[in-house]
Length: 453
Image (cartoon, rainbow, N blue to C red; front, side, top):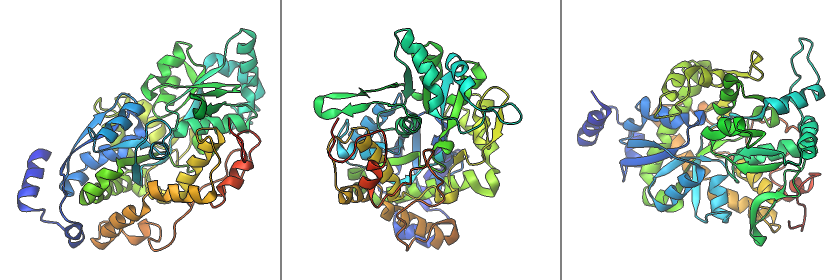
């Protein structure tokens, strides 16, 4: 029986297993939805929510559609062509504060933690490698500092060329992680100056960063247009399999259990279709749980699903290299990283305000927020965009109907301000989300106080 027929029967006669909690939420105001995603493994909760029937359980018939790039995806959510989408964790914030396209976008679901890496070309790796200490077995010692890039930067400078690296979008996690890693190694990634019409982000840069869509990263690296990039999987592992580059550091090594993607909708859409939104969240939470349950027992099945051309469309072996708890740096240098992709454990799905504040502090640090803001502004903006109140309603309904347990979630009656289970950032600077301005001022490289770029 097809999913279309199943959904029709559900809508006509009701689900036999319909619960009181679901009934209390009420039927979806808009059962037919189109959702966008970019071809990355961390879109998995959307694919699994559909493939495992969790969306149908909520009376939702969903078309999942790959988008050309993050800008197109955001624009289509804003215009209503998409009901919602797999988004960069900084995208709802960037839109809300008006960096780029101004729109009120919210998120009530964090799609995953970790999942990115920084890859360099073989030529750059050869220049870096002598700077990197070895382990006893002769493999490179990790984490690798960005300071080891300096010989490569000087090499390109001597040739009269800029050292260029790609990231996926100006308000992407990748942009901020790459900038964080570079600055921690004493390299300036450049400032944005939007008040002067400069949105390139290369003022005073030692390393020039530019936007490249994720699936195009390996080809762009191979062409020599960029010397390295920061992207999500499977596009770092693709560079290894293709023999064109070497991943040098994962974002788990930059900041363990950092937020990565979110599910975003327009604020207007959420207000217009509250039941639909809650039912979507229920399905996504269940999908995230499925992806992580029983020590990742379902990951092999997830890899097969994601390898389809309608989702990520990469070779199963490439996707499995990171999705099943390992990561390959140089060819043959395979290491265990069980938390490279986290979808549910460590309370990954909860939209913590501290996540939003970290992204906002990096926007200010690099000039995307040109003028200083009060600590209170950071708190209010985080609460406006990262909607834990909506998440809690969906989570409570899953507990009430027995689908998930209360201990699967953080204490939903607690404040839940700061994401737990996070390790130390690579530069040793302590993230203090309750005092964001003090945090910004603690960096050696970046804007401080009243400075403007």
